[in-house]
Image 1 (cartoon, one colour):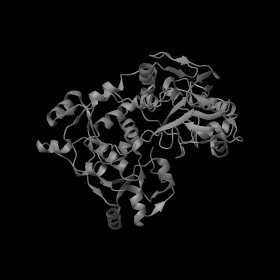
Image 2 (cartoon, helix red, strand yellow):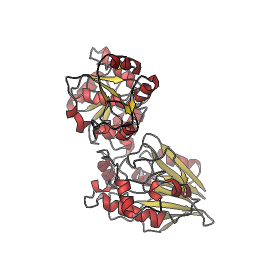
Image 3 (cartoon, helix red, strand yellow):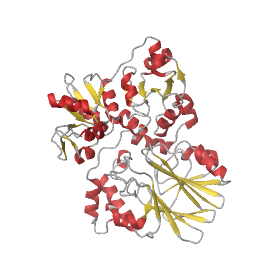
Image 4 (cartoon, helix red, strand yellow):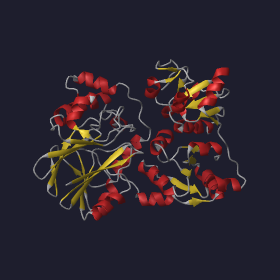
Length: 473
């Protein structure tokens, strides 16, 4: 029997390959399904089932294409949803034979109503692994406020109550030595305080996960998991609907997204489709020269998360700039979160654009040392665009917290006539923030290279763990 975790850092997402005696199952596959098919073929196994822990919000699953290409059966927990594809709506406790192993569905409503975990039982009848989806993470549990974005009467309080019952009555009785394989790790917006670890034993989680504390009453549990929740990315409900209704094949989406465009054709697409430009290069390369009104969301970071968070509508027409050889990766990572309307990329990049005489803009980006010297001479407006939890832990004294996640809500707080110095943790999010606001006409923004990490290293900034009243959502 084989269990393999296939972890995708960009989405902080875990998919799983399970195999026994020539039969395989995939749990929560990503949209590009070829790797799973190739894995099974290499091992001379047949993919029999695609198990889905729930209708995902943060990515488009590969269940539809994987079933179509392999003949595998799609399995969800108990659900009344009408879908655009055939699937098995399994009952709580229903078992599925996989070679010499058995996979038992455990219905665990709470994150969503159909949410389920899958317990792997070996040929000797011993439970070995729990694939917990978004019900149980390492160090956390799934947030209970997402399903109400699709079904209004499912309040977060109701879902949190269901989650409490699921954890106490369905998960905690599972043996302590069972290995927990969650749907996500740190960095995912599906929880609020997940560990960097991506597996653990259930016994250790019972001792260390706040949500599994047996002394916690139902009321205290509900209060605990609802406290500190921030609004989820706006694209989440659209991904849920794609996962319910079905979608275009990823091959067709990538073929369209990797269309090379000359500078003239690129400009024509911009005008005809009112497309936005995503520049996926490194932040400092973007600073040195970029196309006017382009948005910098670097590929070498949480690219998919920040595209979905800042652009929101998955139907938005997109053209992009990428390093040579990275074009297919960009189109693939957009498709993973349902952004299927990528129309092509600029062939030859900004160099080709500039050679035609078209303009390039720059962003002023200064070192932390330079900022410290400026602050010794004058007052500066310092924007910290990290998440509120990061800011609360430690920040530069008198910095205003304006998280990138909610930049739209706080535009009125920025005076276009004033100069602002913008920093995040490492310099990635600050350039995203600066590029977004510059596209909206905010010109007086200066990026701080290296962000808070570089500022701390200098030892020249007064730090505070006090949350100033200027903190905004």
